[in-house]
Image (tube, rainbow, N blue to C red; front, side, top):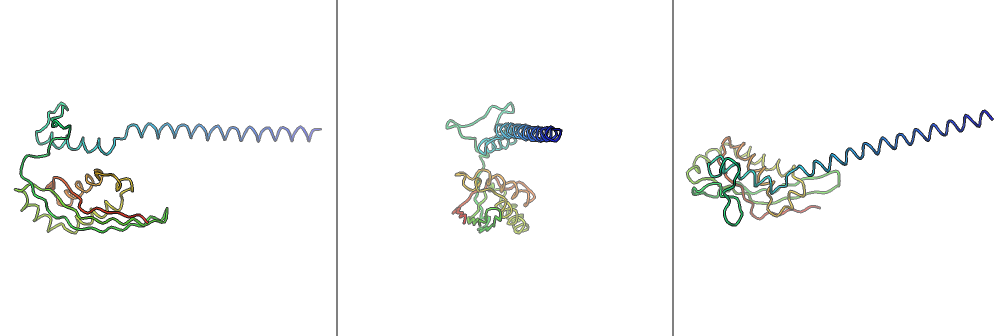
Amino acid sequence: MADQKESVDGNEKARLGIVGLLKAVALISVVVLVEVVAASMLVPTAQDAESTARKLAAAQQGQLEVDGNSAANESGNAPPITDKETLEVDLGRYNVTRYNPENDTTLIVDFELFGVVLADEEPDFASHFEKNKVRLREQVIMTLGGADTTDLTDAELGLLKRRILEKTNRALGKPLVQEVLFSKFNFVER
């Protein structure tokens, strides 16, 4: 009889231990889920980030009011970054191949990259570009290597353009490139 009572008490303790463990796992799961939902609501979209970047750049050049009121044109687009004459410069042709061991796929990205520079800064750009050509190329390749497939499927490639623009200007040592443009952009995931 005593053995039976000890057996029942042992089973009850085990059941209570499992229930406690399940409660702890459920609580942690709920907390993580709430944090993920909150974070996804707070993270801006690529379009929001690009719009904010354009407004900030325009504000620094005196084209927007400081209080945040936009000087957007009638079509609702962001104002042009500058009214000065610009030129397109060739930043190279790229073919980036990246293997992802997690899902055993290879991503191949092929494109031509151009930059927009102010016409009066073109000689300065050419000098800096020639000195830092390899560094700039490495930054573009590293940016593409770290890009998600969702970044590559964005119709406007906004996030990639912003990242490449930032890294290009950093590699040049001066903010000479106003905008980057893709030509013949193709990517294949196998």
